[in-house]
Image (tube, rainbow, N blue to C red):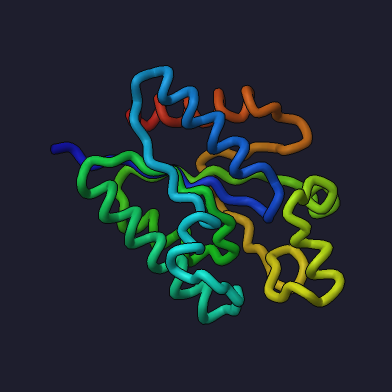
Length: 174
């Protein structure tokens, strides 16, 4: 059995990670390429049903998420991580443990993220109802060397997916 590959799509909250992830999955499905999405909000409901998002909790959560990704890829499952992972070390850990790994960074200005924020995360942060929000109270450490850079203002979802597919082909994922 061949090991699976993994793609980590990162960016500030409300930068478009889930939209790009869903569009990528749809294109891969149409190509006959199976993939499992590890979406942080869904996994968080299981691992931390009453999340505080405190640094200690995030450490445990992202270490667990990486571990799940490693288990899946080691068993031939292709994975897309749909998660902010505001600290580089978590994304670096996945890269170090998964042989075929691409990091995709969605560059999106904070003001654009705030405008797009359907969950109201940034508004809650401004009212003090949410703490530890990357881009607000917590630093988001942008990747130093992302394999694919997407611009949320310039790149449509279709162009974003095409850029990721191109990188996947170049790296022999598909």
